[in-house]
Image 1 (tube, rainbow, N blue to C red):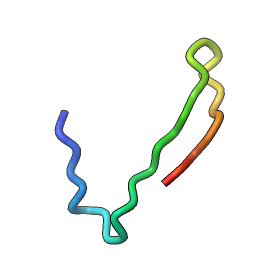
Image 2 (tube, rainbow, N blue to C red):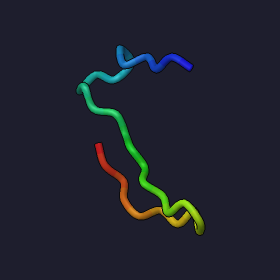
Image 3 (cartoon, rainbow, N blue to C red):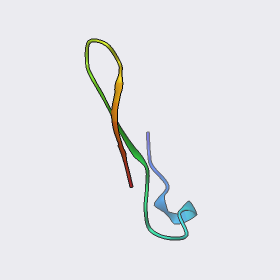
Image 4 (tube, helix red, strand yellow):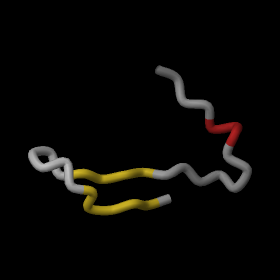
Length: 30
């Protein structure tokens, strides 16, 4: 899988952090 960063106009990409067992979303960052 190749990520295309050129589509992001502000240079930021979302990153979602999840708990490995429960899959609960712990944090969303850019």
